[in-house]
Image (cartoon, rainbow, N blue to C red; front, top):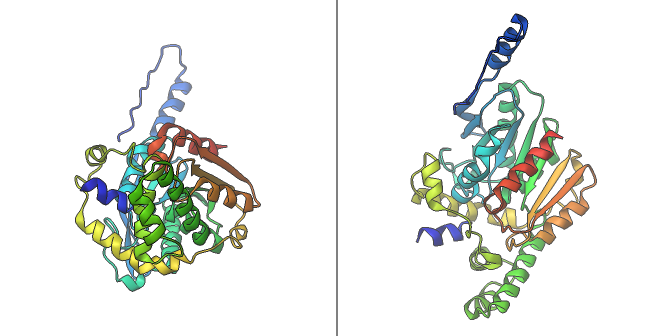
Length: 342
């Protein structure tokens, strides 16, 4: 039952310091000063934003390293969208960066909010307030921003308004035109269903889930898209999440809250099309896609990449579905490191 629910919705640092007899006194002092400057960080804070507060976890082995703010997908997907990223990729990234994990408004450890406040405009304000907090807290003019799925669309919305405090952006399996994204998702999922001779899927996709989409039709389409392309959860371990995070269960209230926010934001997100706006920002952008993704197809990400006119890179992960960081975590982490540190 847990697996089906997940399909639907969609440190101490160890320092070894050896002082050799061959070192000069000055050399030893310099070494000690370097060690003192390496300060791990593990904090949980609440950031004020637009009549609510936002829970932010900040982790890293050296607080002087570059900062990455991660925006999870959904909207409202704490389990697959945030905790899996933290476990499969975040912990490795924390060795070289300070990683900030935002629980978006009304979700996870962030307090409940009225459905009427669940708007793109408020989410953009939230990102702005968290970016402001991080730049001040870490005394840095700019941070890096990463968003997965809806989180990538949200990241673009924020950057279109103000990119002055972001140096690089990573958009992972994210749409920029929802009508095209939904149409391609339906096409690829139906192609899979026919290849598999899955009569139930074919019937649902041709009779109950043809675009354009309302809320109910998209739920049907997404349930099959999660199974197509090799299955979104093929490399996902529920046990690993509850073992390696402070959350020991898939909380029912998360599922309820996610359904509420999806319903509240459905029309606004589903009509999103920022193709003509993405060049209002000019920072370097890394576009990431999963070749087997049947939610946001690789072709949709490739088209977004072709539209972007400033410094950019494209990486298609050949063995990944929508959760790229779960399917190919080592390659994912190295790709992020290479992009941010170049």
